Length: 292
Ligand code: CA
Image (cartoon, rainbow, N blue to C red; front, top):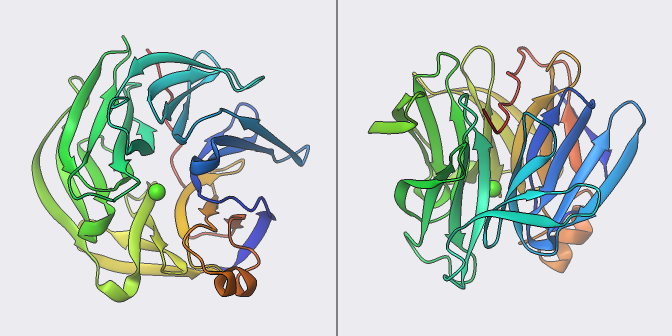
């Protein structure tokens, strides 16, 4: 399995790819530049929308449009002009905090977590869920760098990455209430792997995890803790991945320029690009959308 560059978008902090089968496009964010990128596969068209503030994550809505976890809270964003309409302000009083990774569950709630992006203070963030009625509930307290989220195919397990813990934790998940419980360690990573960042799950229930500072995405079995497949990239800051394409057989991978020195940028000309890996041994599952 080898990588291809889809687009040298040169994102500072490319993140949170989302596949949209209805428009045959991949969307992703450049968090610290406040931009939402869209790449239409068939038309080969790249569209960038400026939101005007940090955009941690996005999710498609069932009735069209999208929701976003912006620096100051949850909002719907008009993709024609980037204008946000706030649904719920969250941590807007915590000056150092912004939203980071996020994703929808099968019931249509949008989960997204926060972090202190000024001092990286330990436990300064939380993982929240935006419910269908726009109420917000905290799900996990004392998070340092809220990152990858995934739900098992049978919808009974929720997986979560708080990056500095170098682990994936699992919870029992109750879809009807959105409650998570019974936290346990699913995978623990050694320092040489890099920092676990965003992730996605495939149809066999295996996790595909992006490693910041790790030059790779790795397929991991969360039930046994066994490493299955490693895909290497020519850039070090791998941030997240999701399955896309007609049959959900391609893996789209976001990357960052942030955190690289001048020399690092010179030796990694593709840093910040969107990559794709084809001919995978499995397929993904389609992303859930926000709303009832
Ligand atoms: Ca991330």
